Length: 410
Image (cartoon, rainbow, N blue to C red; front, side, top):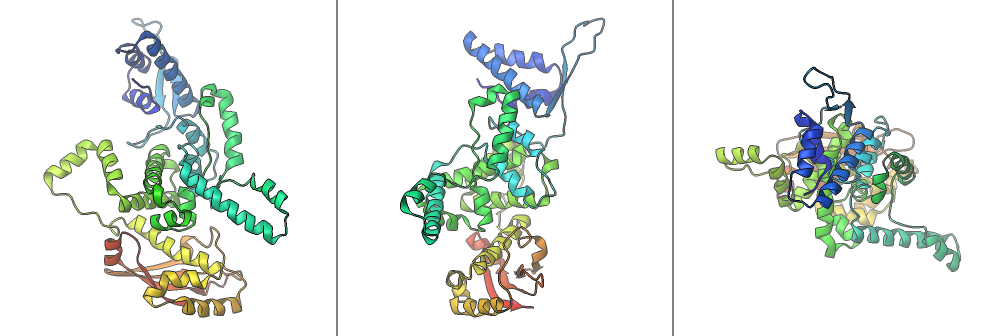
C-alpha cells in the first residue's frame, strides 16, 4: 500500500468528502497498525505539499441542521490535463518553481526542462561522463593559460557536470523546505541531460558516442523516457509555451524512434480503454517520423543548427564528415566558411540564432526545402545553409535526413 501525490489528486478531483475517503484508504486495508499510521502521516505531508504548491485549496465546511460540524471542503485550483500527475517526490516543488520562471524569457522552455530534470533520479553513468569531458576541457584551457599543475588539480575539484539554474533552484529549495520539512528527506539534483542533448542538437546515437555511453544506452533511453513522461505530466497545460511543446514532442519522438515499446506501453497504461477500442475497430496505423509534424520540424531544425554550431567553430572537417556523402565535403565547407569569415568575425549560437525566424522551410509532398540563416554580428542575415530533407528516407532511418546543397549569401 502506497500513498502518492497522484492518488490524492484523483481522490480530491472525484469530489465528495476527500478527508473521509482518504481515511478509508489509509485505515481500511490489510496493513499493520504501524504501517497504517505511517501511511496517514505520509498522506498528511503530501496534502500539505499540495496546498503549499497551490494545487488545492481548503475551505471551512458549511454547517447544516443535519451536520453542525462538517468536514472542510477541498477543491483543485486549476483545470489539470487528464494525464497530470505528481509522481516524483519533488514534483510539488517543481510545480511551485514553475511560477517563478518568466515565460517571456528566451530560455524559459529549457529552464522548465531543467526544473523537471532536477527532480528526477540521477543517471550516474551519464553524469560521470559529462564530468569527465568537462574536466578534460577545463584542463586543456588551464594548460593554455599556463596554470601550474597543483593549481589545476585544485581547480578541477570544482568542475562537475552541467547544473543549469543550480543557485536559483538551491535557494528556492531551501525556502520551500522551511515550510515543508518532509521534503528534506529527498535531495534536489540539478543536471542537464535532456537540455544538453537539445542544446547540442544531437541525435540519440550522436549523444551516446559523444559521451562514450555505448554500454549504458539502455540507461540513457530509460532516463529520456522518464523525463518525457515527467514533462508531459508535471507541467500544467497553461504553462506550456509553443517552444516547450516543441521540446516535449521532439523528446517523445526521439525516444519512440529508438524504442517505441517504452512509450507505447505507457500510453496504453494512461488510456487503456481508448487504445483497446481503436485496436478493436481498425488495425493499428504504422507511425512515421514525418507523421508527427511538430517533432519532425524540431529534428530538422536541430540538424541545421548542429551545423551552425560547427560553423561557428570554423570546423570544416567535422562538417565535411556530416555532409560528404551528400557531396558537400570538408573542402566545400572550408571554402564556404572562408567566404563568410572574410565578411564577418563570428556566427551567433544563442537563443536568437536558434529562433524560428532564422529558419525558412518550404514543405513539399516528398521533400522539404530548408534554409538556416546565420546570425551574423552585423544583423544582415544574408548568409546561411540551404538544403533538402528527404521525407521517405527520414521515415526509413528514423531521423531527419538533411542534404546540404549550398552555403552562402542569398
